[in-house]
Length: 282
Length: 305
Image (cartoon, rainbow over all chains, first blue to last red; front, side, top):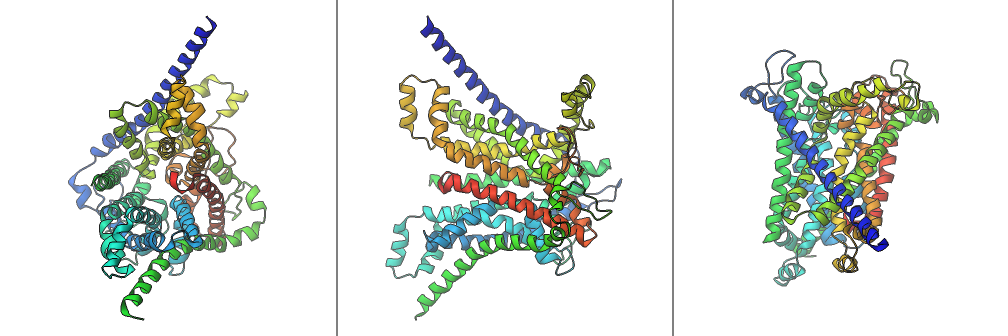
């Protein structure tokens, strides 16, 4: 009898445990659905052609987010160009040249720390280096701040991907008489292309929603601007300004902006993962 | 030296300099914060870290309020997120029907991809009003304000306080931690699990006696990784914490964190001392997060993350 009740107790305990983990998963997925639901309910209503064709309005007038969207595109594109160049080269050094050297371990470690460093500190750093000395906020400073956030991610994925390439590939290239640099560029990089694109997409997904590093680098600009040495608008900074304002039409534009950003970020994430899976399968 | 060898050397140097640039960024970050923050630290001395008087009008700055706010919200978020993240990871690895495992894992990862400003807006416009109406008001009306619980839950019922900030942070770090936990649990050798099941263990016993002890070391690393994120998170917190520099005196009091203070005041800081005080705050945040993240990376090791 005692044995039976003990077995029963274990069974009950186990049932409760399974139920608790299920509940945790339901809560996590529920949170995602709740957030997506609020985004759709509040964002879809304000979506109109004006959002894409007009600049951000003064309070209580009709307007859109054109300047912010254009600014975000410019900032992210610039940042990604810088981040991909630096990140791919750094990742290549780690995978192909650094190996197990002490310096390589140090770079890897610092890169991993930088990967989750608070983005607002990157903003402060760029302010000290690129804004204060030149006496003005600029789009260029914003792009550099974003690039600094994407570099660790690109470096990390590049190294991981290059390490997956078989040594036979390298040896085959060398046997044909190619130098190491040529083998890396013409064979290894080409073979790793889907993985490198994934890394870039994940980096883009990370920076396109970033707000904190832009607050005191590119600042924001209520007008459409293409000047890299002037403040430039961006969706996240505009959302920040509008969401905390007291005007209903500004708030509803902020929701539209949040919806747009979420769509872009989530599709970049999903696209990146799909690419990675497809190249795995091959 | 022939052309090909020169070309090889050039390319290697190019790659090396990119790698060194990554290192230089972190060093430059620290240096910029030290240089920027030094005037404030030397002006106020140790008082800067213990005083809660943060007043741009009289140009006096004490970091205690934001400092405590940062630590309390981050720890609160971890307390809420840790059991949930563990639960999600265990469910996905052990109990989830196979057909659901992939989409559910994807959903959790999507949660990690949502930008923090979206969390912030959701917190401000959805969570805060709901929380004020359904949690704060009933508690305020039913508790004696002089009792312990009354003091603990005292605060303006607007939903913008330290507790809701922790709640939002918990939702944000949950997917990171769940994803890392899940990957770790998948590294447990199948023969260990199967041996335990073969002895007649229940799933609960397999998870708590075999799987979790097996990944304990890296699990602590994952917790610290989440903590590092929670400490430095800016936008979501800025929206919902209420932004007061006073020393928080209850769970439902408005407060501020280091990151939210910098985000709110930096662009408008007028006096040099104000800018420097904010930089000094940044330096404090850098030291806390660097220690946490470095510890996390050392515990996790490279493979499991």
